[in-house]
Image (cartoon, rainbow, N blue to C red; front, top):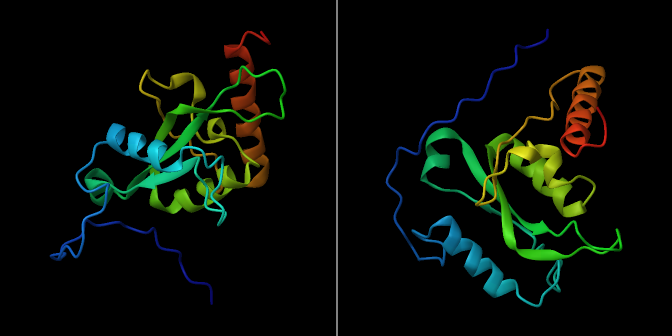
Length: 165
């Protein structure tokens, strides 16, 4: 007999958590974390020798604990390079707040570089500080509807760039 699927509900932590150590991110602002990540990864390229990505990282903050979200940051890629195969990471970060249940899939796809940051956000809506609005790309939708949604988003992107009417 099939069981009904339940919608996962996230609740704030309600137990006291004893601090065992301080990390560089304790009580830091997002700009502080960006500076710290740039400092410790400078000169490493896109990954460390152990294969750890340096272009993306995840922040769990107080807001995220309350509402079940995280902040995903990715080094901004300079699109104004001559060779399309060259990846030039800038010292700026693109940022998006997204649900916990989406972060693993998105982080892995960004790390594998089979999807772009703009595939998960409304690229045209980023603000001056690099914050973008999360757009659910519909992994819970039927395949045909998901493809149609992706097609519509791509047409809007091309319109925004003045490439189609």
